[in-house]
Length: 118
Image 1 (cartoon, helix red, strand yellow):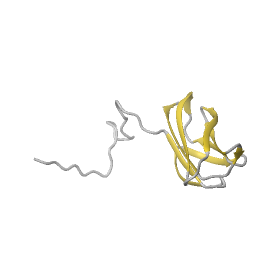
Image 2: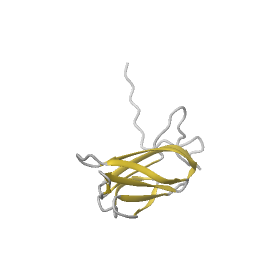
Image 3: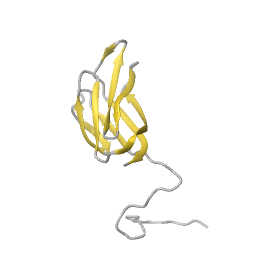
Image 4: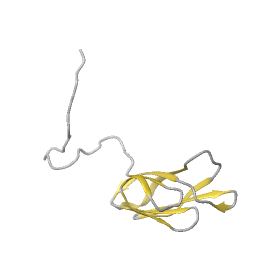
């Protein structure tokens, strides 16, 4: 026998907030920034993005993380051989960097973060 569950919203027991995740984890932040680092194309928990130099996009969180113990994945967009890396990681944000050879290069980049919210 099959069952179907159709709902518009799932709320917590009090009916006033979202349901908490149990025994699983979800990304607490993600972003997709354009090549120039001046526009956020898609995001979650991102208050702002700044172009902080060629190949550098700095992300500020809407909701801070609990310290700087988090895992961040970064990926360049397109068929490129960049060396992406994260630095300036803190409870309020981080910077994504794209390096081609030994030179910083502007590239659309996406990031995803797992960790605990403050």
